[in-house]
Amino acid sequence: MANQIRNPSAELEGLLRDHTSYQNPEFLAVSGQHKYHFSSNPSYPDGSVENLRYIKYEPIRGIECFATGQIFDNCGDAIEHWKIQKRYDARFVMHPQECVTVKHDSKVLYMLIFPKVIRDISVWIEEHAKGQVSDVDMWEVLKKTEKAMRYLSVESHSRRSHGNLLRGIGIAADLNVYFFNFGADKKGYSTDIQVLDDILTSIEPKLVDPTIQHCVTRWKSFLSVACSLSSCATTPPLFCPFDSNHVRVILHYPASWDDEEKLRFLANIHKLCTDKCHRYPSNLMNDSTFDAEMAKKYSNWGNLISATTNALSQVYQFGCRQGNYLRTDRAGNWVLWEASVVLFAHNSVKHYSERAQAHNNKLLNNPSLTYMPELISSQVLDALYQEFSKFIEDIYEAFYKALENGYRHHMFNLSQILSGRL
Image (cartoon, rainbow, N blue to C red):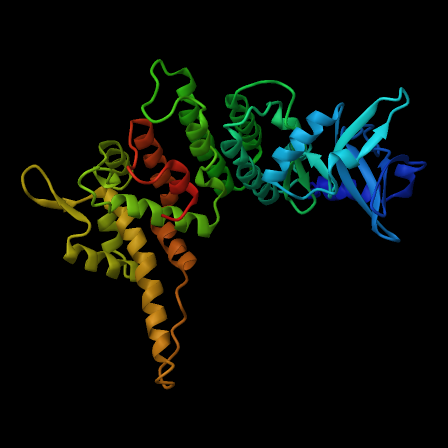
């Protein structure tokens, strides 16, 4: 009999709604007109008990809801964590100063309250290993975890404490990711990145879906290369191991990107590759490391495109006539410029979006024309991925290598390049 696919967080929420799981709940606090009670943690058929504390409250009279609490011994720690969490994610029920409870020994505790039932990610990993969490759901959790961890690159200038994020990443029933533990140890960011690598390592051999497994394998490979900087004898020109720039570039790996983020990155890299400033030579196409990395994977990309009959080949042929994708070799012959695949990809997105829009605008004056469905950017992106599997990841890894070897732009910083619009 096949394993039943489950959602561990949704199951826990169902157990909490069973009145037998919170008989005589411990009173916690009152905020406004809402009363909060600790809910007794439910036990499972195998005898295990959830480690986190759960709370019952009524946002509307007669409507019971459940939340997850993070407990602190003193108000200072609670407020400090609240401030960091507030910058990262404002989804809280109340300020920790409003939420206090008294233990039997009269010790006052403070708490952050998350408005959903969450379970730590280790539970999801264990259930996935048993075949009871689907690869698709586990992959969605991984992507959202990496995206949520980007707060590290924003907070890297602060003196935030670090701890075991494996016990501090919470997953809700809707697969949203929360951080409920910022740790108690003063550790470096290498610890946080290692946790992410450990999570990928534990999940990779259990994956059945070959596409998802390939994505996880490649992600792990990138982390192993990026994190090897921590043992380098010399300091890289742009960033030191696990400083703010290094953390930022590690945690922005495209594994978790949606189409909009991929297109924005492609547009930004295109801008770097077409930079014409002569006073500060920072054209990425002219960077020897970026050029060499792209040449390893795209030495024959022009022939692959020209051999197809799809619309992308038209963009390629037009660009070649303009000399956009060519350069001269040492003998003076015109040859394909491998790194120009970046220009081609950006031109494809731009050309077909503009062409469809211009055609459809003509309909306003000539209703007899046939409507041309607009090729939205994500459709062009899909077409590019059919020809070049994971080409955004290839570009990102080549860009990372260039950064490692000293590339920098005279006008744009790393944060702008990775997540802004240039």
